[in-house]
Image (tube, rainbow, N blue to C red; front, side, top):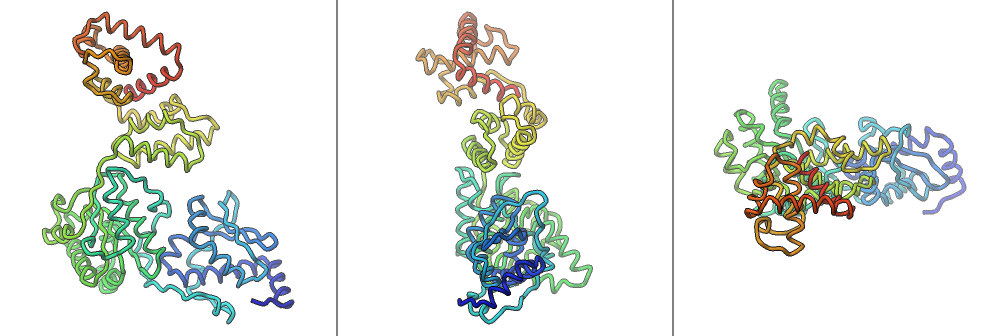
Length: 477
């Protein structure tokens, strides 16, 4: 593209005029919106704000590191092209994380659906991807944090993850329509649904509607009241992919179930993809109509099981690494042992620790963890038993539970057994003879020796003392 003197002068005069720069950015936003479609634009690009210009470089601001990295990888080159076409003197686009006081993004409603373009711009613009638009009040925005890259995979969720990836790559695949994800609260169902939606939108030319079952019901009721049910039906039945979260909410709502059933049939018959999540499998959702339960179970049903200790550790390590705050392994192990039922609560506990460390500039320690998370840990309190102590110690040192009461005297077995006796003395009200009987009918003097020996070793070996302290905190908190 040849740039003449007049073009340069015009460009520089526009750069000096802040209003002109904002108008250029508004036109670029409109072109992006036209190329990728409103749903994708709303999901990934509405939070970009115009930053300062420095020579041939323009800065764009995003609220989080994740969103910055995503926009850089998916749209960075296109942003550079559009800015250069709009203002030829701009050669580079720098994407940065916004700070307090930085400019705000342009509201979506201020971005026109189309923008006037010069002949040169029209010639340079690649074939636009057109995706059918769905009315914004019928769609819940996808969360940019929930992608396949940020989903931690382990044994309990690997099948559901694989099914979700398959649907994202090949929607309406035989045997995968509908995809029904089910599992307990906070195990990752919503994360996978958002990841599917993000992947499909990013691939282009696909319209995606995601909403909770509750929102589906409220919109249906609103359509009845406003006498716009035909528009409601047409909108949802025109999408390529419909995702409904927490379907169990429709139990007992017969009219809404009927509407969903007909929408379901219309989409499947048209070869469109449906993804549904619930807290139970279709066969266990008593209260849903039999015909709906049968249809939901005719595709791929994927269970997300309760997390394992290994998966919880992986999740915590991933979140801690992304935060930039150093969280000791012992703290991660402590949290993974204590908070076992809900990934959402586990991540929330870690986020609170990290926020506390950032606010007060203090390192994350086991003591600080107990202090900051006392309310969460209290909810998980239960009476400690010798059997529980034996199990935790055996898991920690990777020995068999039967070794706790066996006659084996090898050091790798005897030392954990002594630690278990020590913790039984510290954390229970059992007498020495009672503790001894739980460890293979050993004499009370053996228990006393174990307590004294562990106390001595803790004073000599800091790493050993830290292991014992970690176990004690996990058991008593």
